[in-house]
Length: 305
Image (cartoon, rainbow, N blue to C red):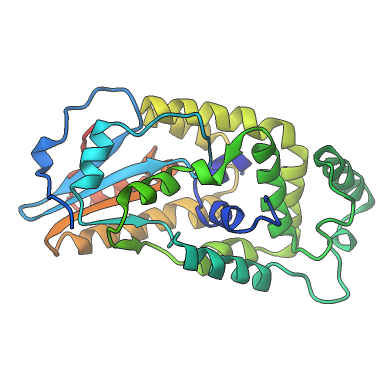
């Protein structure tokens, strides 16, 4: 799977970097009818509604350059008129601290084993060359499991080139939401477990893709951000599908989770109120999206913008 696609699908690694400097360094209700008409510009926003419940679906990018402007009146009206905001995982300060501890608990190799001891001589040479590009010593990530090293090596080049989890969409939305109640569709343990449960060979392959793709990940993410910012969900899906080369990974990271979230939305429609859901944009684009699974349940999804 292309690493830029991964960055559009999971929030935990980005929240981890925001929380871990060592690795990186009463509201007025608004009627749904007040949402401005779709303009075809800006990130896409959808809604699901019945007689007493409105649920907004907003696709996010978890890491962005800080100069990207995307928060507009339509998004603001939907968020301000919602009773709560729901993200993939909890992203408050307490949760970020727990995530840091969890990553260190799950992501460390057993004593006596080093990351480089798991690599072939050819892989070791490529890996150390990649670290040199980042200005990191060869032993920098020796204590880490390959999956955690891979996440680190996929994000550090982006952060060195202007991308930041602190500028990510969820961070901005949560700041705008203020004291609104926050909910989550998943736990950080579940998301990190997707990586931690991979066999060691698969973890190494994932890490080596990060090493060998250091020069490619930013251009691909730039393309994804450009389509996201235009609200072109179809083109975003095409770019993401280019990276979906492992059906098992696609199921674990994307399709199974989309089905689970559609079930959550279906259940939430039984409770009155308004909810603003913000999840990685890849989950709201292409075949087997959250919208597709909702349609299978007979639930209509309307694009707001």
